[in-house]
Amino acid sequence: MALMDFIKKQFIDIIQWTEDDGETMAWRFPMAEMEIQNGASLTVRESQMAVFVNEGQVADVFGPGMYKLTTQTLPVLTYLKNWDKLFESPFKSDVYFFSTRQKLDRKWGTPNPVTIRDKDFGMVRLRAFGIYAFHLSDPKAFHTTISGTLESYSSEQLEGQLRNTIVGHISDIFGESGVPFIDMASNQVEFGNALKAKMEPMFQAYGLQLDSLNVQNISLPEELQAMLDKRIGVNIMGGMQAYTQFQTAEAIPLAAANEGGLAGLGAGVGVGFGVGQQVAASMAQSLNPAAAPAPTSAPAAAPVSPDEIVATIEKLHGMVGKGMLSQAEFDAKKAELLKRLE
Image (cartoon, helix red, strand yellow):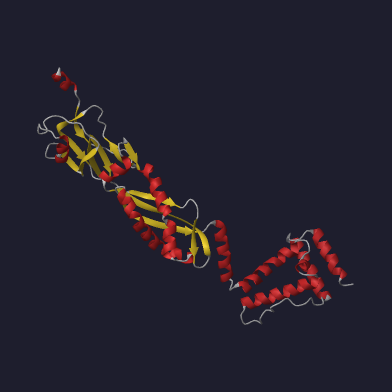
């Protein structure tokens, strides 16, 4: 009867793993009720490692190569089994393969803005994103802390933990650096190196090696970015005074096209002319520093000559042709200006 049981047993002669995708990090060799034959062949390919687990304990770790499983190649496992037959009979043990290939172009990013204290803007909220690369370096640590007895374990199952841990350290890196937001773009490499140094111990505890970590972009939320763009625009225009002059000049055609027209910029047509003169002088000064300085305040409404009124009517009529004023608006402005000739 014992002989029949032995004959019915299935034995494994070749143990190997041909990876069928690029995401599986750990894979358990299908043993079922089979036993490993004495002298069986174990093939571990480049970018792989294999682990024998016996009665819940990691017994041996194999790097790339081909092995004939004997007492000499499994000294630790032989000790754990305490075989007294010098490894002459088949044995059972779980075999796990691990992929040590680099996992490239893994993305991380802040799902929500991170609040930090900035030297220039006070409290600001920042977004950041980048990429990182890692590989499995210690299969024993990875098996005991991450993959365990699962039939297979993929990098997709792990990346959520890695990504969120990286993001969790972003605020510390930015806060400790003391670098103003304006200068952060030129310090992205330094931020990446500092963040990598901070993350390496956690990766090592999982049996992983963090090969690279890059910060690709640091930005503000849209509403804060719009405010910063406006501030930059003010500086480009030469300061707040020049920016205000530019904004006023831009508003003249819009005011003329809306209810109230040029007169809506002040108390009447005279004020409209005064503002126009001030804007013209201010723009001339900003474009030509040698020109006479613009007045610091709007002059009082000056008497309007008939020629100026006629010229204004002609300009308003031109706006009708360009679609900037409707015919009804033009007629109303014209009537208002003609009354001043009476």
